[in-house]
Length: 564
Image 1 (cartoon, rainbow, N blue to C red):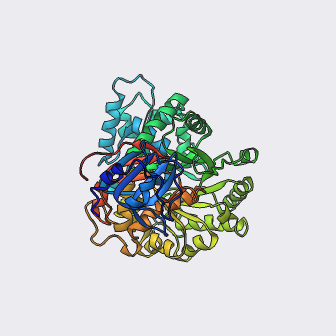
Image 2 (cartoon, rainbow, N blue to C red):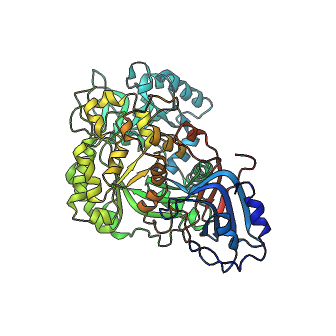
Image 3 (tube, helix red, strand yellow):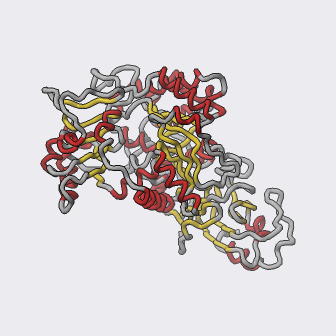
C-alpha cells in the first residue's frame, strides 16, 4: 500500500471501528485514541518491532504501534488524525548532556562564537558597551583561540580598549576558560600577588602579571563578582531555551550542573504546567556534597515527570582546548603541562561515597585519560555493583587509555559522550595529543563494542544544540564540508540506528525511565519526534526538517504541512 492514502483510510474508518480486534502488539481500545499519526516509517527503537508506519496515542501514552490496519480500532470520532507520508517518526530525542539554562543565558548575552581574531571578538564587546551604564558588567561566551592567527590565548589589553569603563568577562567556547579585562580583574581584586587556586590556573606574562585569561577553577575568582540572575530572568531564559530545543526536535534534556536557585525556578515551572520539555537535572556538586545527607533525590516512577533532580555533577578535570584536560603524559604541543586535575583520585572517591550513600546518581566530567582513569578508579572503590545500580556516569569520556575502555562495561558505568566534540576538535586534537593517544579518543565504536552503555548529547551551548548535527557526526566523523574524506579515525563511526539509540533509549536508561520512555511501543509515554523525511547516514541528516514534536501526548510543535 502506498503511504499517501493512509489518512483517507483512517478517516473512513473513524466511526464504528472500535469493535474490531486489535493485533497482539496493541492494547485493547476501551476508548478511542486522542491522536493517531501515520508516516512513511516509524523507527521504534523496540527490538521486537523495529519498524512501523502508524502510532496511536491516548492521554500521555502510546496505545498502538503498527500498520494503518493495526491502529484502525483506535480511531474514533474525536481522534485527531495526522497523516505525514514520507516522514519518519522516532522516540522523542533527548540531549543526554547539555546546559539548557546555559543556552538561555547564551541566547541573551554576547556571542563571539566563530570570530577569527581577538580583535573581532573585542569589536562585539565595544558595540555592546555603547549605551550601557558605566560599570555595568558585559558577559558572553564563545571565543576559541584555536581559530585565531597563531592560536594563542588573548590578553586583557584588547578588551580594555573595547570597554575601558565596563567589567568584561567572556567564557571560552568550552566553558573552561574566562577572558577578562582589567576592569573585571580590579572588581575581583586580582593582581600579581593573586595565587592560582587549587584546580585552576591564572595565565601570566613574563613579569608575573595576570594576562586576563583564567583556566578552570581560576574562573571563579572573576565569576563570583558577576551579579546573579534574579528568578524572573532565570525563568525567561529557561523558557526561551526550551522553545529553541523543542524546535530542533528535542523532547527532553539532561541538564548538567545547576544551582539551587535554578532548581527552584525549574520546579515552579513544572508545578504550574509551564515547562514544555522534560528535564532530568544534575545539581552542581561543588560545595554541596555534605548537604546531600539531608535531601533525597527525585524519583520518576511513571516516566511522566517534567522535572526530576536525580543526580549530582562534578568535575575531575578541565577541557582539551584550553589544555586543562588531565593527561597521563604531557601535552604533545606544550610538554610543560599535563593539564589540571580539579579533584584528585582520593577526593573523587570520597565524593562518590557521599553521593552513593545519599542515593543520588553521580555524573563526573572527565576528558583526559588521567581524569577518566581516576574517575573509574573512584567508582570502583565504592564497592561492587554500586556504580552500576546508581547508574554513575562519566561525562565526555573523550580521551581514554585503551586499557581503560572495557572498564566502563565491567563497572556498569555510562559513557555520556558528545559526537560533535570530535568533529569540532579534530583540526587540532592530534597536535594536543600526538598520534598514539588518538586510539582512545572519542571512541564510540570501541565503547559500544565492549558492551558499554553510550549516551549522546551536544553539551550545548558549547556546541550547537541540534541533535541532527550529533547524528551526522556519529555516523560520519566528518565536518559539514565532508572532511576529512572517509571520516576522522573512521573505525570509531557507528551506524544510524546505534546513533538514534544513543539519543533515545540510552538517555531513558540513564534517567531510570527505560520502562516508560525511549521506545515507541504500547504502554510507553508518547514522546515523539517527527522528521520531514526518512533518515539516511549521510550529509542529508543535517538538513532534515523537524516536522512535529509530541511531549507526553501533547503536540509541542504542530505538524508542518505540505510535501516532505
